[in-house]
Length: 277
Image (cartoon, rainbow, N blue to C red; front, side, top):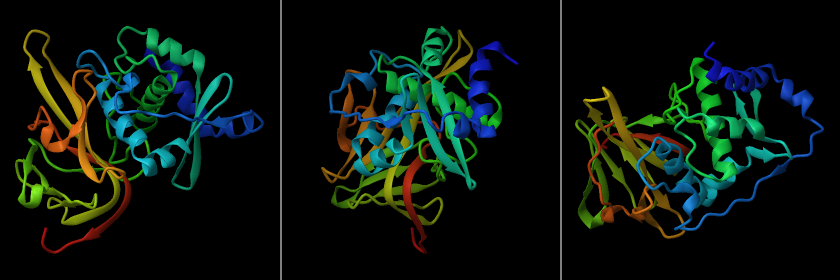
């Protein structure tokens, strides 16, 4: 085993064995209270980094009350540990994240998820590595990804939209995401119509958009993730870019409107089949 993965493997093995349900049943734990304001700095970075995917998804989760309540019910904290508790296939999984391990992960130079100085955000980063290892026995230390069609924050079905998505403005100022082959429509009630799936999503969802370029010198792809979401209090669609000089804007004020990586949707709600997308 790669020694860099040993601590993550221990977290996952404990969760799978359900040992934490017995070992920490009497541990005094409490839910976390965390607030976010539009210009809060703990989810922003001075430059594009691989923390963008984690930060860009956490921002709308903490901004949308329904998603925040759902996710934060799964997060508990004791003096020495964070606990991420989820139900999966009739089993309860408890990922215990020691605070000491959070510091260890942040100190690893090759780990790109840990640019924040906020302990809760860093704990989420370690949890995401554990989520990845749980599903595919491999740790992606570069970015948060939807794995096997499941998102890490709600353990719900994730949707793929299309590649090469562009933000367009339709009739009556309706936001449209035009992909290489499909169109997705963002409605003023927060619902989303996906022509690629012939379905309508109603509830609370986050659209993950990415753009990458190939670095010829390093022979690697360098990317940046952003998110689109419907603010249920302002009744409007917003775009979040974790770069400190950009932040949150209304969707049509986005500084970037074209993206070349696969767009995905995560969140909580219902889907219904439609005949005419």
